[in-house]
Amino acid sequence: MSTFPEPWNSSVSHWQATNRGRNSLWGWNKTAPLPTEADVVIVGAGSMGSSLSYFITREGAYGAGKKVVCVEAKDCGSGASGRNGGHVGPKTYVKWDLLMQPYPIGIGCTEEEAAIVMQNERDNLDLVTELVEKHKLDVDFWRGELCEVHYSKAQTEWSKERNAAWQACRARMGLEANPQTSFIDDPVKAEEMSRMKGATSLHIRPGGSIHSHKICSAMMRMAIESTASDFSFYSYAPVSVFPERTAEGKWTVTTARGTITASRVILCTNAYTRNFFPEGHLLHDHIAPLRGHCAVITPTRGAAGVNALKYTYNLKDDTYMVQTGAGGIVLGGGAPKLIRDGLVTEADFFGQIDDSAVDPVFTNYLGNFLKDNFVGWGEEAHGEGLAHIWSGILSSVKDWLPLIGDVPGVDGVSMCAGFAGHGMSRIFACARGYADTLKTGTWDEALLPKLFQLTQARLEKTAREQAAFEAKNGRDYVADHVMYQQAKYAAAKVEEAATILRAADGDMGVGEIESVAKGLSLNPVPVAVAA
Image (tube, rainbow, N blue to C red; front, side):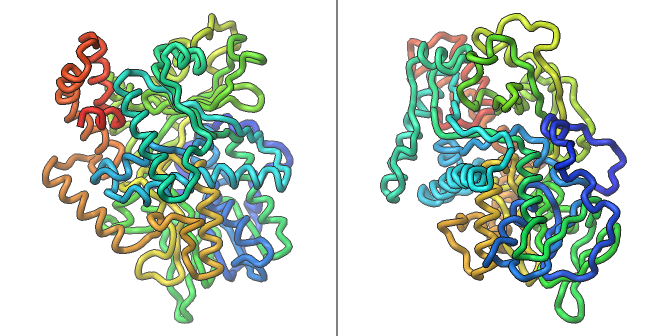
C-alpha cells in the first residue's frame, strides 16, 4: 500500500521536467489552509481529476454555483498522468476482438458493446482536439496518424480479417464503416512507410500525441479560473482513508492537513484506489498498481527535421512511440520481450508502487530499440540517443475497463479510476461523460459506454470468473492481473500455434514458424490465428 509522504524521491519524467516554469502548478496551495466544507471534493489531480474539475465547473454544469475542492497527495500530474508516453492512440480491431473473448482474455461482451468502447476512444481523440483548439492550449498537441506495425505473415492475416470484421460491425451499427483507416499488406511498402525493420503490414488510423503534464496542468488551471464555480485546488493534501459518513448524511474527507465535509466525494485515484478498500473487498482486488517505464530519445539526423516521424506508433512487444514537439522521441513498453527473455519477472511490475526506481534492463531495451529496429537510424553522435528514462505507476484492472460511478452501496461517494495504462485515450471522454451523468442523473451511453459503469454485479461477475480461472489453472502472486493472465493463456497455445501454422502455411520456414510461435507466448493477438 502506498503511503504519503512517500519514503522515496520519485523519478522525474520528460514531461514533468519540461513544465516547471512560472505558469505551472507545482506546489499550488501547498501550505494554504484547507476549507472545512464543500459541496464536492475530488480526490486526485491527475488527468482524470483535473479534467473532471474542468468539466463540472463550466457554466450550467454539475458544479456551477457550488463549492468544489480538489485535493492531491503530491503535485498536479505527479503520478502516471505526468509520466506516460503522451500517446493519444485509440485502439481498434485488436482490443475489439479481445474484449469479446472469455475472461481473462476479455470480458465476453458482444460485438456491439466492444465497438462502443472503441468508438469512445475515437471520441476522446476528437474531444482533445476540440479542447486544444477551443481554448488555444499550449500543450504540444499533434494530431495525425497512428501506425500499427505487424511483424509476421500470421499476424498480418489475422489483422486483416479482424479489421474487416470490426468495420463490418461498425457498418451494421450505423457508425462510419471505415473511420479514416487503411491497411497496408505489402511488406516492402510496409517497411518503407513505417521505417521499421521486418514490418509485414501496417494498420494506419487517426492518432495523436500531447505533452501529458501540460494538458493535465491546463485542465486544472481552467478549473481554477472558472467563474461558474467556487473552485480551489490544494497540493500535498494526501487522503489515505475512505470518507466517513456524518450524522447529517454527508461525507468527511480526512487529509494529512485537515478535514473537508462534502455532499459528494469523487475518487480519481487510479492505481491507488485499492488503498481505500480493505483486503478482500471486491474493489481492492479489482484494481492493482503496475510499474511501467518510458524514455525520451534524442533522434539522429535520420529521424530529425525532414526525416522526422510521420506517425505515432504501436510496435512489437507492447512498445509504443511518439515524437515530441521539440523533436525528442518518447518510447514506452517492452515488458513482454524482457519477460520472455528472462531478463525481468512479473514481480518487477505487478504490485510495485515505487516510481523512483528505474530498471537498468529497461534502460538498455528502450535505449537500443531504435538503433536495432529503425531503418536509417544511423550512428549516434555524442548527445544523440537515450536522453532520459523514468518510471510510473499505472493501474492493472481485471476486466481492462474503467470503473466510473457510485461505489456500490455507498450513496454520495463515486470514482473514476482504473484506466489500465491507456488513460490518455480514455480519460477526457470519461470526464466529460461522467460530468454529464452527475448533472442529469442519467447515464448517457452516447457519451460513456455502459460497460464502464461501476456496479456490484460487474465486480461480482469478474470475481466469479477469476475464481473459475484459478480453479482450472492455479493461482500465484500475480493471478489478479489480467495482463499476466493473457500472457499465461497465450503461452499455453504456443505448441498448438506452431503445429497449425506449419499445416496452414507450408511455405513458411521452420525458423519463421518458431519465431511466430515464440511471439505468441506474450502476444495474444496471433493466438486467434491458431485458435
